[in-house]
Image (cartoon, protein in one colour):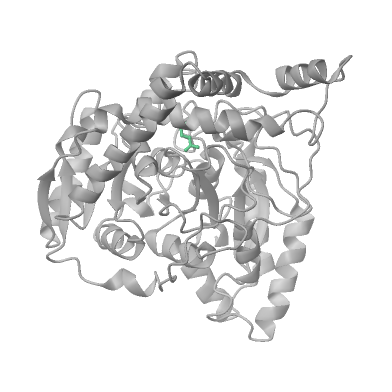
Length: 489
Ligand code: GLN
């Protein structure tokens, strides 16, 4: 079935005119009709609009319009509900945006459309990307396609579940502390967090601006390379995007990894790591040795401080970024007798509990009496964490870790215990604090129940070519990425 194809498989068949984009889009729509009642990856999707885009793509295909300039021509790609797509709803899985419709396209959406993609759907997520399970959505839970009693991870849980359940060919997520890599690991797809500045954030609703990056979620590493190549590049509308040239990431995939050095951080192999996850990562390390890589033990000594540092910086930035949702400029409004009452009633009714918790925490750490003790200190520790990585990269080409300490947990298991939820981000957040790139890819399954396990590789700043090459070598020597959940297959 066409919805099961990867980007590279589908574009090859479209180019040979064996199938049409309309058929590919229709097969995704059919799959959504079949399984999304159980998975709920999508908040909404506009089938007529997607088919109209497909017809336009088919016309271009008939004129021979694919090729290098439009590497995604006719390919259905779904989008997390935090990215602006002109004319489509934008809710960030929150009630506070009401009936807001995006007046413009995010830069990444412009780029997807210019590459010929059929951009469709609003994928579920934790409200304002705050969470690790997609349980903090005002639009209900998303379920893990491998076991619908379990969470898909978060905050890009809809993006991961939709790819895994073949409801789209690929998707975009966002990653502030692991939100692309962690749900990719828990659902069993590939998730790439680019280096900070690699991809423009224009049109991404900001959570923590110094940490946020948009990343591809795909069925294999080749597709991640393809999508990254499309969405990367400097953008004058995002002053933090970096004018590094965009290499041909796909061409870099097939290089040799023999002789490359992979660092195993000793701090990551301790407490709370599930035995089956550890065994799968150990086996992946062995596989890399077989492929000719050299494994070196390294130390990232400030790892212990990463979660505390992240939850100070991310909440501080969130408290400032979310001030704009005041009932006046955007979306929903609850009237009050004066502006202050209007603000507080609107924000009280519009934001969910986790978002309120973060705003309160972030406002506290920025307040005049505590700024030095918390926020300023966290910024200094952030520099130490980044320096740990830069030092490690003097001797290794990439770092290898589990993506998450456990496989997908049960819905409801951690939702009453924010600290437990925060601790599940232990392996992913340092990457954002350091501003480096990272990818999660499938490396095995737990036995009973059968749930995916993710391997994380962390690369040098702007080292996505090498990172993807290392990921690809492992993927191509294993079959994990080919396994499908029984639901809908
Ligand atoms: N789980 C982390 C948080 O809640 C990361 C979320 C993300 O990357 N957007 O902040």
